[in-house]
Amino acid sequence: MKSALLSTAIAAFALTAPALATAEVSKADVLANYSDIAAANYGDSVTTAKALQVAVEALIATPSVETLQSAKAAWLMSRVPYQQTEVFRFGNAIVDDWEGKVNAWPLDEGLIDYVDASYGGPTDDNEFAALNVVANPSFTLSGNEIDASQITPELLSDTLHEADGVEANVATGYHAIEFLLWGQDLNGHGTGAGNRPWTDYAQGEACTHGNCDRRAAYLKAATDLLVSDLEWMAAQWAEGGDARSTVTANEDAGIVAMLTGMGSLSYGETAGERMRLGLMLNDPEEEHSCFADNTHNDHYYDGLGVQNVYLGQYMGADGTLVAGPSLSDLVGQADPVLDVEMREKLSRTMLALGRIKTAAEAGFAYDQMLERGNLGGEALVMGGVAGLIDQTKSIERAVVALGLDQVDFEGSDSLDNPDAVFQ
Image 1 (cartoon, rainbow, N blue to C red):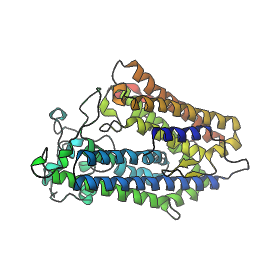
Image 2 (cartoon, rainbow, N blue to C red):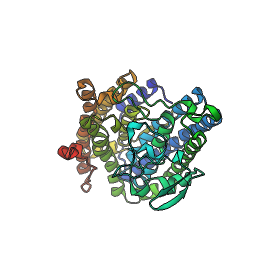
Image 3 (cartoon, helix red, strand yellow):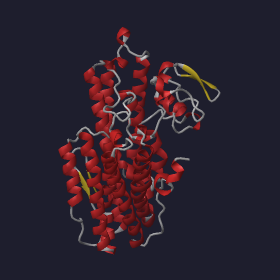
Image 4 (cartoon, helix red, strand yellow):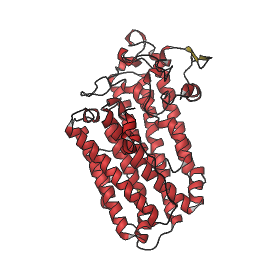
């Protein structure tokens, strides 16, 4: 995993890097570089997910404090490149249709494994909120008897994920794995993440909470599935892949896809659903990575992904820089003043998200920032929200400057209709 120092250095390079081109660039050139960045970014996501897979296999083979910690560290490392790929959503249907397999959130974790008594049981919204597949080798689901004696990737993806049409029935992806590694975070707004004991994967009498073999099987199946899902998406952005072919087929539509991803991730998704909403509800369960207390990094690397696309550059996990003709070049050709404005706003947003990240790494966790009456936490979170909203306004202006059709970005009730949040 990149050190905090290296992450800061990468961000600083991105914030200060000069525009790449002095000659005219074409939309085709920009789209080709965008696709190269996506391919590299998803490739890094595959690489780090495979490292997580190795760590999970070691945990299962020899459960211990050390192997559990190594698996957690590998999960955290895997999130760094993946979060930067979220900017490829929204504008690219192939990504948006697939994303729920790997990053769906929030989830009713009782579907997967044991939970604290305070969690409750089935609800009117979700009959299977406390199904506990780990503890039950067979169960009835939507009127069908399910044989879950063998926990396989196919059982998770084809039967359990979004079971009964309920989006909170998240059985696959990063956050299901996160829950299996950390367990529930029962600290509320207090200090600490989830604290699952390593003995939840021990065999024989050392096993805690029962069904350690099935818990291990679930963790392995979910991790194997994550790797295969990421490999599939990486292939879509390789030469000849469907995602690359689609985004480069029509130049104006491709540029719209880029701007749609930037604006929707900035505004409705991150500023709204992931940040402002949690602050309005003062709910630590509204954290994007609530089990691991990694939400500060989720927001930071989402912001970095938006910046990557605008500047046309991505720093790979191995330190290799992918860079080329960019949206910044196109906007600069059409309206140099707007390009400077856009770059400055991206810089300010990254500084605001960096302040959240720095505070969390110093011990002021994101769920503590969400506590009602915590003015310091509110100021940090709202600094990020304000930056993301402000940069979206300039993204909208870029659409006009480039002579493109109007683009509709994802919205959020928390930003567009706050009263609806409490109805």
